[in-house]
Image (tube, rainbow, N blue to C red; front, side, top):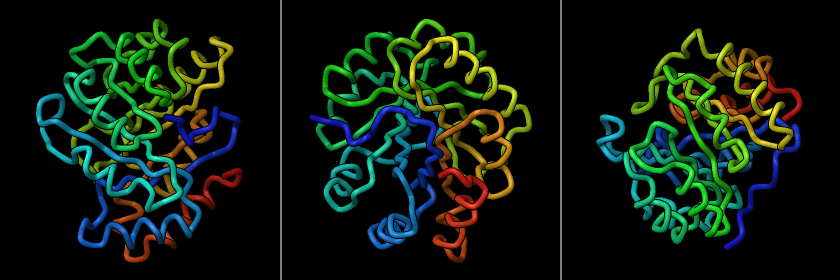
Length: 229
């Protein structure tokens, strides 16, 4: 299996999150945001244990694979990611991100992901110190900084997020590796400039796009806030 996600190259990317999409019209909405210039498609997976919510299973990734040209960026908000990697890889994920706070050996899970030919990411919750990422910097293709508390869409951007993003950007720079810095939570046309100035290069936006009256226009407005996308 080969991931469609290229190494980080300094380009700003927009990844609409289908957590906020209308599942009745998901295919239509995905085609619309793809045509409007989305770069990746973000899929949030929740197990009801790591976060107090349930979302999708591998079937949602299977249903998207081959129906869109967008790489599938799958965020595992689950307690035991080692149990989910195989099914989501088989379903067609291009990138799997796991939480550093998971009840699992995260380093081994990252090896498991790479062994399947998929890009690997690691995420931190808002109250987790960025320094904990130091031990896995040589194993990841992406770091995801949560700018809301994970579990539910539509939350407001946490003001402390830009400083945390800057800290993670420093860690990435010190590693000497090309690692995507993704931010998820409360991203819209107003908050996008804040996270970009702090060092982000992948913006996940859910309700700001899919809950808008015109998702295409909403995506365009976020892209305008990211002039290098």
